[in-house]
Image (cartoon, rainbow, N blue to C red):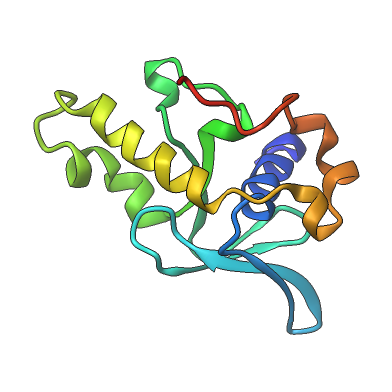
Length: 135
C-alpha cells in the first residue's frame, strides 16, 4: 500500500466516530468498527492496517468510485471481499441501494478531523466541505 493509501486509510478511520485513538503495545493506534459488520478493527497512527482493517470504497472503484474521503470507510477484509455477495446477491441489481445504505451509515459516523487534532495532518486528502453528499 502506498503512502497515499495509508493516509487515506488513516483519514477514513479518523473521520469515523467509532474509532478512538489509543495506545496498543506502546504505539498509537485507532481502534473502531467495520462499516459493515461492526467488528473491531485497528489502524496504526501511520495509516497502516493492523489485522483485518481495509480501505473500503462505498461506491466501488470498478463502478467509477473515487478516493474522495466521503466515499471511503474502514471495513474488515472479509466484509470488503464479500461486499457484493453479502449485500447484493443478484450481482449488481441493488448497487445503488447498498451504496445509499453505506453512505448513510458513514454520514452518521462522520467526525471532523479537527475534533481529534488531525485536520492539518489530513489536509491533503480532505476535499473542501467533506463529507460530500449527492443530495
